[in-house]
Length: 215
Image (cartoon, rainbow, N blue to C red; front, side, top):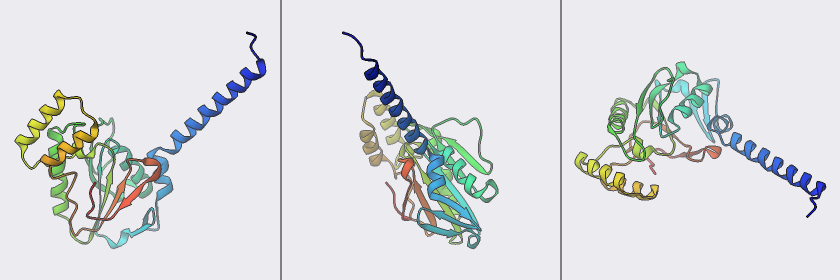
């Protein structure tokens, strides 16, 4: 069979076009790009999607960043607000070579919790309990948060769950289902502290959720 030079050239062009489309989509789906599109701060007013927050009206601004992208989200937020304007907690399963100044870091477990998962939950609850209605808390949630930050109803039950999950091959949805039976959940965010919640499980399209909502 004789190869058709024009046909081969067309296939090469199609492959190159598909590769460029993939690279462009991947770049646009990054957390940095999503924050650049949906989070903006100018003259002391923070915009998250359609919500506006006058930062000068708050005595303290905290960021709680949870999930595998916890550090990346904090970096993206500080790029908009500046390091000096923020403090808070980062809980991630990913080891970081650098840390953002003013943030306390925890390396929680995923897909099953570890000791730092519990330490992170306790630290977050403690800092939230110390806030008043004059504080603004920005919650940033990415994948893996339900394991990386864990507040068990019963520690013994959590240990048994961890042992069970390690001995089985389960879909992540089943792991999440088991967590719900022995855990208070990601965070009981039912405080009177003003809060903004950013969910970036799909970084290309950040969403905000009302305060007091968990998933």
